Image (cartoon, rainbow, N blue to C red):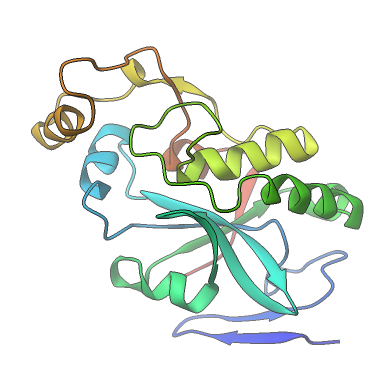
Length: 204
């Protein structure tokens, strides 16, 4: 039975129970990417060589789709509002390749339970690998890794990214001063976007 319709300029997503979702359905656990309008977006793009600087995970609430994201805090944002907040309203929606086998109701319950542990936590401007503050890709990575043991994207050290661009250098100076934590563990939106565990469901 249909529970919700989302119309955009290029796609029509229909939300069902998602037992075995087809490519025109939006499901719990889907991962959505966009280019953020934030002041740090360009620096993230330059450092990671990816156009995607923000992301979140889809959860349905009373039949309506929300993006669970780390913004100012970890919060639920209505899907349309989240899409409208990105550059050019562009997004890419991805899903585990074997979602029909892995994301059974019990797995979704574990993802939701794990997600709840982070709700309300402040955004992490210095990208530390702790649970005190959380940034967007860290949130989604930890929900999947801790919830159902799936690691989407390879963890990196800060030193592994391209830190040569003037925009990146300026942002690091702003955030860290002269004490740049080169050995800090980081997961980027670009790394997760490129993971072979995911495939594209829809985009605009």
